[in-house]
Length: 321
Image 1 (tube, one colour):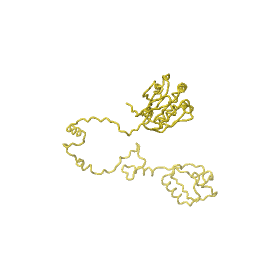
Image 2 (cartoon, helix red, strand yellow; image 1 turned 30 degrees about the vertical axis):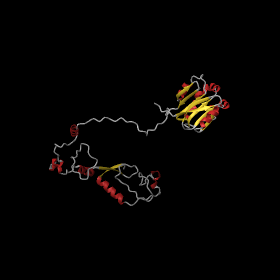
Image 3 (cartoon, one colour; image 1 turned 30 degrees about the horizontal axis):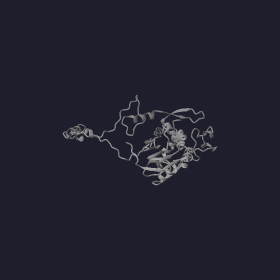
Image 4 (cartoon, one colour; image 1 turned 90 degrees about the vertical axis):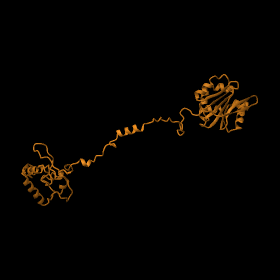
C-alpha cells in the first residue's frame, strides 16, 4: 500500500457558498486563480483560509500557461486551483499542460486540489492519472477533486542505505566424522603414513659434483662457433690446427686492389709491421673527412672518417679486407 499524507478539513467561505477542502497539515501552499475568481472573491477566500495555517504563494493561470512564470521543483506541500466554469472550458485543451507544470513542483505525497470544476469535464480523472497523480477523492456535487503525488516517481533515485531484508541460507548439519575423512582424502600426508626423509634416498654417487665435460667434436657434423675456456672435446686443438694451416686473403696494396693468399705467419708479420710503421701523414689534410675527400693513393682509403689527430690503425684481420 502506497503511503499517504495526513489531511485536515479546511472550510473556505465566500459571500454565497462554502467549500470544504482537504489540505496537508504543514508546508508551503500554492494558490492558482484567474481574473474571474479574483473578481467574485473566491480566490481571495481561498488564499485567506490557507494563510491561517501556512505560507501561501500566488500565481495567475495565464502567466503559467504563457511561460511568464515557472514553478520551482518540489517546493509546495499542496497546490490549490480555483477557476470559474468558463475558465475550465477554455483550459480543457491545455489542462494536461498545466498539470505537467504543477506535478514536479509538488513535494512527494503533496496534494493537488482542483475546486469549482464543472461536471461536464469527464476526462479530468484520467488526465490526472496520465500525468502521474493518484486520485484520492472526487465530489461532483461540490465540484472538487483531490489528487496526490506519489512518494516515488518514475526515474527517481532511491537511497540504498536503508536496510533491506536478506534471505539467509539454510545450514545443513554435517557429520564431523565424514567431514574429517573427506579432508584426509585430499591431504598429501596422513597420520597413518610415516614421514619420508628425502636425504636418505640419495646415494654417494648422487652427492658427487659432476665434472663438466663436452662431447667429442665431429668434423663432419655441426659444431659450436667457438671452443669454451676449458675445452675437453678437442675443438680447441682443431681450431688451433686450422688457424696454423689456413690461408689468409689480403690486398697487395696496389691500385688494382688484387687479393693475395698468404699464410698465417705472413699475416702476423704484416700486422706487426703495420704496428711498427710510423704514423702516416696526409699531404692534402682531408683524409679524416672520408673517402669522398681522399686521394686515390690515400692510405686511409676504405676506412671510416675520423677526428683530426686521432690515431688510426689498419687492422689486416678485418673481414672486409
